[in-house]
Amino acid sequence: MKNFIDNVFSDSITKLENGKLNYNENSEKNLIIIDKSYFNSEYSNNINITKCKEHIAVFDKLHAIKTPVLYWFEFEHSEHKSSNIREIYEAYRNGIKKEYNADNYRNTSAYKKEFKKDGDVLYVGKVETGFWGRIVTHLGYAQSEKTAGMQLFHWYDVEKFGNLKLNYIVFEKEMKHLIVILEKELAIKLKPLIGTY
Image (cartoon, rainbow, N blue to C red; front, side, top):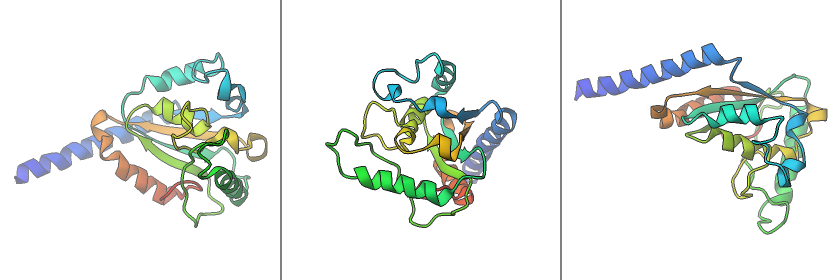
């Protein structure tokens, strides 16, 4: 039994090391700047953002990822007003909460009551598969309004608060159970404005 347990730990450590190596080698490639071009009312109704000319290359790359991903949204510049952003998000969320039949209803990400007012990170998340779909939801363009996410298009003002940087780390498929722990640890350290950790 001792050898079996040792192997489980060794395998987990190897998978974590591989993820760390992947991040170190690809951190600049695995970065997407979410600028005003990602915020367009046409993406809500008429145009699929994943197929539009402007963003198809990004979403094709994300669509090819079939394994767990750890990701975080951070502000491109530090001059933002974190508490103001949080207030705007709370107002948006409270305005649609439990209005399931309203035309503008979207299920939103939860948040802790206490938050770091001068933080540089908006959100930390993970997904076992389908990373591209998770990003579509966070942007606010998911086909199902019941899928929870930040719904950025509906409340985030790029002109006022600046671009967001979406960073991500791709892991091996066997990491799907460990990625939950990594998400929690990263969120505890980064203290995002939105999220439950």
